[in-house]
Amino acid sequence: MRRLVAPLLMVLLVCCAGRPALADKRLAFVVGNSNYQNVVALANPANDAGAIADLFRKAAFDVVESRRDLNNTDMRRALRDFTEKTRDADIAVIYYAGHGMEVDGTNYLIPVDAVLERDTDAYDEAIALDRILQAIEPAKQLRLVILDACRDNPFVKSMKRTVASRSLGRGLAGVEPSRPNTLIAFAAKGGSTAQDGDTRNSPFTTALLKYLATPGLELGKAFRLVRDDVMNATGNKQEPFVYGSLGGNDVVLVPAVAPAPVPVANADIRADYELAERVSTREAWDSFIAAHPNGFYADLARAQRNKLERGRPPVPVADVEVKPASPPVVEQAKPAEVAVASRAPAETTQERSLPPDLPRLLQAELKRVGCKTGDVGGDWDASARRALAAFNDNAGTKFDIKLASLDALDSVRAKAGRVCPLECDRGFRAAGDACVKIVCDEGYVLGAKNSCEKRPERKATTTPRRGTGGGGRHCFVYGGNSFCE
Image (cartoon, rainbow, N blue to C red; front, side, top):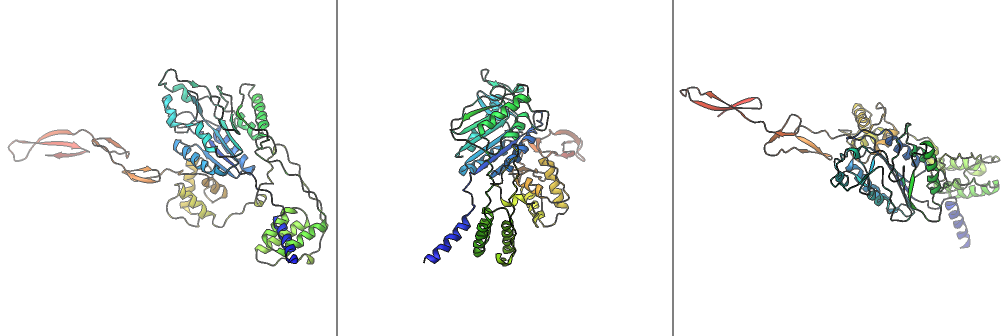
């Protein structure tokens, strides 16, 4: 019995060796609203949101949801979907760039289709900050909201007050979170405005990109460094501010880089290799490579794993000439770089390969967001190119329509709902993903612009009736045609 137990224990050790403990689940939701429909567009929020989303992806966040130019309905739907994903999250972050405002002490984020003629319209046409906080409330360790939304708001200048005493502040109002381990970072402290910036990114986002994902940097210190950079860049005119507090334990968004492994004697590595060879499964080779990621035996183990995947038998180590292993060369990580080797999957170090059915996958996604009509095929034909061109026009992207690319597929997949407007026949209008018949009220008819217009008045005339001895009949003109009674 002992002879059976000992080998089994050694197999388990090999299969479990080098596997890291379960890491924290980190989620991020990023929104950039630039193309406002009823006021002048903002230059930088779309750029800021794109850069922040890339930062979280490079930091190996488990989920990064990135959205641009959301209207009221889409923004509420996206928040609802993100709330579902945060139920088992350890860290949840929401970043918003765009217009924000404060009405009677309550902060609101403004979708791109807002009109806001009156102060009370904010309740219906904007998203309250409390709703943003509810979306990340389930996170266990850290709830973080970053608002680059303290810009000078053009809505306030034209907004009518329904009550004279109701306040409309400059920028956003200071707020204290009610939940522990919750931080709200403003681009400018309460009651002041932030600069959009003259470069591709705002001063606040530029500083965030520099410090936020530094491996091992405590979050509170990161925001203090952001504050210093922004004040220096704006001549002390803009001071970022963080509301809320954390406990005594250090909180970092990106874990510190693990130290380089200590070289192991070749004899020990060979013994581990021979044990993995006896098990001869993909899991065994993965465990060996995790425990010994560098050197001759690591390369040999990768080759054995590849042969196993292709159906070939592994090569015994006795048939291979063993060369002395050279010590691994470890590059020193730069402070500003985001090092995520400990969390990134193995394939991130290799060039992405194109799936053979990429044209079909991209067409299916284009059809999902309403830009593709007809059947989905495996050829990148004229219909597929027109669909990608329609996506470019409506999403603000510039993908080459002549070919299907992974970048285009990723961008289309990132869209949660319809992107291209639904085209309906005359007499019908778009309602979500369906065309519904237009029914006009009494006294109205369907006009040339496919909308209900007031029925034109009848123009009456009296003409002689033939053969009636001078009698008359009542006639009228409607729609360019004459009718007589």
